[in-house]
Length: 373
Image (cartoon, rainbow, N blue to C red; front, side):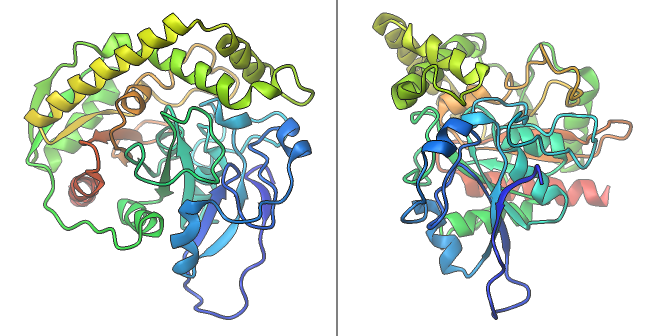
C-alpha cells in the first residue's frame, strides 16, 4: 500500500476507457484530508471542502481519480522515501530509489495502476521520479497551473505537472490541467546541448545518441551562472518553507529533515534572502538569453543511474533539475535507450516560459525516432 495513501471507488457507469488519474497527496480532493505525507499535518487536517483548482479539468473530462499517492514528507525530499507512510517501490529497479517527492504518482503510472499521475515540482519532484521510474514527467512553467488547494513548499518555485508512460500521455495530462491546450507547432529546430561537470559519461552518450537519432540540429551551449544557482535555490526554498509552515517547527510528527529545513529558514537573514532573490533574477535573464539563441536546451535529468535505496546519501539528485525551477521555465524528462543501465537514462528538455507545446512536440519527435532506430 506504500504507493497509495488513500484509494477512491471507481465511478458507477460511464466509459470503460476513462482516463485513470493518480493524485499526489499534496492536492486537495473534496471530502478527503490532505496529509502532505506528514503525520503532524494529517493529525491537524480536516476534509477539504473543494478540489484543488488544477483538478477542474480532470473532473470536467470525466477522468477517474484512482486515489491519492504517497510523497516524501511535505514535498521536501527528492529521494521518494517516507518513514511513516511507506516508500513506494521502484518497479523498474526495486533496489533503487523511486525518486521524489512525487514518488507514489510516478510508481502508480510505471506499474500501470494509473494512466496519468499528477505531482508537484519545486526542485525536480516530477522529473526526478520520472527519471528513476523510466517514465515521462513535465514540470510546467511557474505560474501556469493554478496552485490554489495544493500544499505549498516554496510558492515562488512550486509548480504542478503530469507524469505518464510516454509523451502522448503527458500531452493528455496537460490537457486535463489546461483544457484546450494542444501541441500545434513543429519540434525545435535548434537544440542547445548543455554539459555539466560530474555527469556520468555514459549518461551523456545516451543523451547525445537520442538527439542524433532524431536528426535535431544541436550546438553546444554554456550557462556561466550555473554554479551560482544552488545557494540561491537552497536559500529561497528554506526561507519560503519557514514562511509557509513555521507553525510546524518542532511539532510532534514532523520528521528530522523537514524540521531541520524549518530551523534553517527561521535563521535566514533578510540580507541573505535578498541576495538569493537577486541571484535568481540574474539567472532567469541568463536562461532567457540562451533560449533566445536556441529553442530548447538538452541535458540529462540525473547525473547517473538512480542510487540504491540503501546508499543514496551524497548523490546530487537535484543538481540538474533545480536550476530550472529557479529559472521558472518548463522542463520535460523522458527515457531514452541506454542498454546496460538499471533504469533507462532520462533526457531533460528545457524550453522558454509557456512553451510546453514546443517541449512536447520535440519530445514526441525524439521518442518516435529512438523507437524506430
